[in-house]
Amino acid sequence: MSISNNKGLLLVISSPSGAGKTTISKKLVDDIDGIELSVSVTTRKKRKDEIEGKHYYFKSDNEFQKLIKASKFIEYANVFGYFYGTLKNEIVSKINNGLDVIVDIDWQGTRQIEKYLPDDIVKVFILPPSIEELENRLGKRASENKENFLKRMSEAKKEISHYKEYDFVIVNNEIDTAVNQIKSILFSERLRRYRQLSLKATIKKLL
Ligand code: 5GP
Image (cartoon, rainbow, N blue to C red):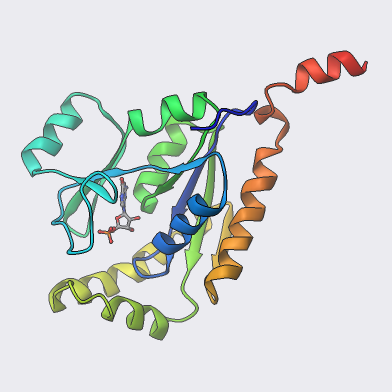
């Protein structure tokens, strides 16, 4: 965990499923210091290649409801018939310690987090290059059953319709380009005046 002189920010990344946001998020964390992924809680079933505590915390409906009652979530939403939620303790202490956190959530969650942490959130929406490419990417997920796949395709358009609620929109034609575009957003946002906590002291010495 690297501690900086900045207040950390929340890089919210939304997109329809299959637009490449998981790959992009992972590359950002691998390439950049001072940024971590928030691990969400979900009631959906674990996919074959997923690891408990790394990709998600997998919980029953009952356990999820208990976390809601205990006010553990910064936001939660029902997405495709399952619950997903972001834990406060995945976020708050990290940004207060100067770490940036990537949050991969849907538009409903983004609205809630924005109310909770309006100054700390940077919202990025990722679009697939075409609907055909999106179908292609979703169809390649071997562990999805057909019914689930069709449901996600119809939900994709619903998610895309919320792109206007985001600060930045990126078309993921080519993964490295998309990653570089998000890096430039992140590096610029880190330089925002109010995020530079040591600025006052620097200015005091200068004037
Ligand atoms: P998947 O099941 O494919 O991993 O994710 C399905 C959708 O749920 C994605 O659009 C993803 O962004 C969203 N999602 C994942 N975690 C959270 C969360 O903690 N909160 C909300 N609101 N959405 C989430």
